Image (cartoon, rainbow, N blue to C red; front, side):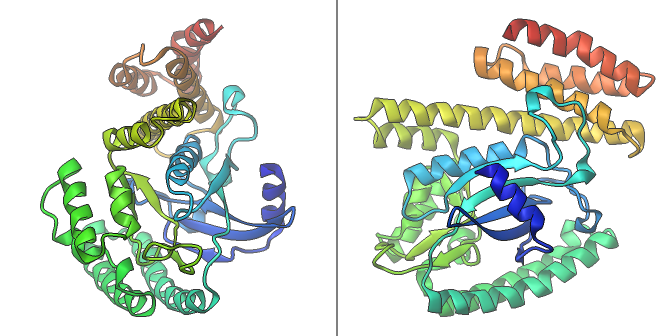
Length: 369
């Protein structure tokens, strides 16, 4: 199905919606309505390239990290969360295990989800508010990116816009979707912070599903805008709809929740825990890529070639495969230092690629064999 989605998206002349982190394309495959999101940046990343350049600095491991996290969350809360059914990366022409080149400018990582069915009247109101909101903030974000404005410089504007759009959404959908004021009232961090926030949500309404998310170590990202309002028949618990932006906020809480929920179904429990382990490994390799990319850009002064980046990606993919098969037998911190050292100290890209192949790829391939 993913290849068919890719073909259908490629036919479209333009996107159907632009969010802060990517471009969204609505398409139909086998009679099913789907949305493909082309990620050009992430709120979780410290750096990104301007959207007008056409590519993305996100790693080729990013889409699998997102796919796995959303699939786990949807298994736990199938009636209240978006369903991501797959992902791919436009910048990788072959499988990661055989990658030869990686060119960040040649596309973006893509996640594909089923369309969330909402209440037509509420969705129309919500869409009108959101279109006005994004028209303003995206223009300002692009302008700030072009002139090199810092996150701190842009913060007052975004805070004001966020407050305004939240008020409009809450007025249209209802107070159960509002979360920002509760977040600012929480002073603790980590597990205690999530627990405090869950209690504040339940004090307002004990049936609100956002509290259940938090109990499972899951966070809804700015739910006031990342939410499809639905009907009470399909979504009996408030705020009655589908959350479209979620993240794993606490790994220990998530593992505990999976273990409790599927205590009587060990096969399902183990499958989800295995999927979560893969998510953690993809997250680790994604972070290693970011460190490597920064070192690579500094070394090449931004003039790096796709073949060298491909060799770095292949090294990290082999590390991911080894970790999946044997556990953390290679210390990530030591590997990061060694890889950065190869990039920084090699006299040219050919030497760097040769060392990566000799010192890392070949030994890891032997271990996997």
